Image (cartoon, rainbow, N blue to C red):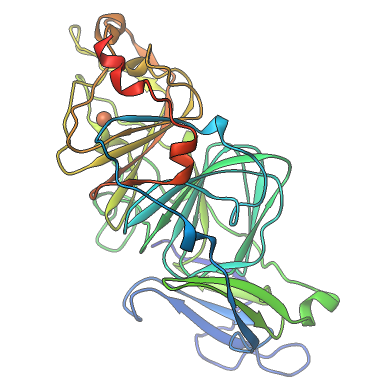
Length: 389
Ligand SMILES: [Fe+2]
């Protein structure tokens, strides 16, 4: 994340003595990506961030999880509202689809998670409904419906819902960033970008464990490529009095995404919001439609030969899918190898329309998606044939 921020107490220069009120020295930690060659932040801890007292194996439920190829190849429709609710936003993820680059899970949760560190890649959580607080070493972010919350690799954090929350969880195998084409050479959002620095919300103040909790040994669940470890830190990891840099968790609300509109139909790259290794994330938002007098204001049939298209419908009315059974909370998967497009009659019905109320989050992957157990559990078996009715 290229936007510089500073939070809490900091010494005047990097890497100089910074004393605690008791005369001791704060422990400086550089958290950075790509081996000192990309974005980083400097964090100042009350205690050593290296002080661990225990490291134990933890059974990984994913070891027994079966994700199967999309065979026989077919477009799919999953009704996430049919999935069971409960649990927390880390352990309660239900895998819909995934590949070696990204995992796409649905979660309907109501309990706080354990402290967690994903060392495999960045996570972006799209909150569909409810209110939830991300607590992290960098501070807290309050999130609600429509927020994308981006958590950098390695950030120690936990999710604390206020009541029931539904969310789509995007777990990358690397870093999730704003599209490169929307950034200047030095990382500032350009004028044609559909969102900018002012739209991003990040922790505004330190989040410090206090009293007995601060000094108690504290377990953190750490995910690496090999699985899970329960690592116990000598002190609570929420002990950062200040940090600065360009790497931190942040939130972007989908309503702050400024849609780009053309005279005739604009393809999904205009909706792109983030990019990750092997995938992109796009936001379809309420907007005026194409304004050519003879425009067909919904998508043409398309076959993206290098992409699987995972679309999560979160609000409004998606005209191109009318009659397919898709509604709020639905996920459609239109894989490479299949041509998809508007439902029968949708083109005729859309002529003359001037606005759309749709809101949807799309993840296009560049390698095929396998289907997770949750997808099989909530599939609408008739969807593939809805164009032939
Ligand atoms: Fe599509």
